[in-house]
Length: 269
Image 1 (tube, one colour):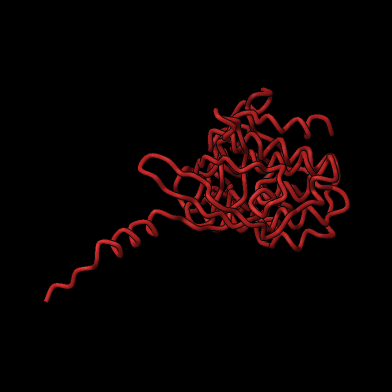
Image 2 (cartoon, helix red, strand yellow):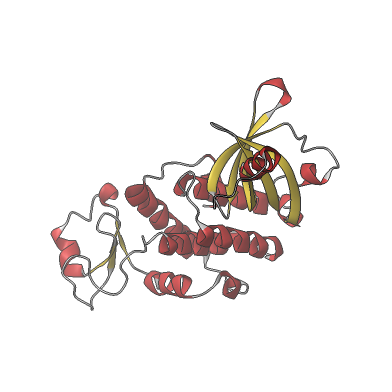
């Protein structure tokens, strides 16, 4: 026996199927015509998507509050044939402490921009999403040395993406001792013999000496959750050195170019 639904039930079912609901955090907003805006939203269920909205973020409604910077919210999205439109939003957690501190604001903006560059559109990335929310929570309560937390985030996102550098043996010959260099092009640590075969004297060689326990720092960052960095603060020189290596590593292997918000690092050097 074939069962059929009344036309009204079919329309209702189709209407419900057009709505998406997911936790998310806003990457950025741009103004559009007619008082509308386009929002680049990073959702746990659907990944990075662009949605249109006429909701005014300066209002006092629940939906308005969820559109403010550094807010973790739940978003109800209507899916049309060729577009998404934000219908309703509610705040889950507002990281307002980030917005009250200029340095925290700048580091959070950098992490959002970097994550936006790394994640593809319309592909769920729940592990990266959860890492980002954890980062925001840790940054809000952290008192100093925000660069250490940012580095931990960068290294962990590389691990999630399957792009962690080789840290246990030479990327050139496989040797496990005399590992005194880090080769960005080759993707990890390198022994002195292999490094000497390359022109490491050139500034653009992207091969760095692994001084100051840099490899041990990288291994610790990979192995431990962000919460464990609450009382850890890297020396300024080590932090800036690692940030330079990781920036070049991401640029080389993931095609991440210069970011508008990364000036926070050059200002600190």
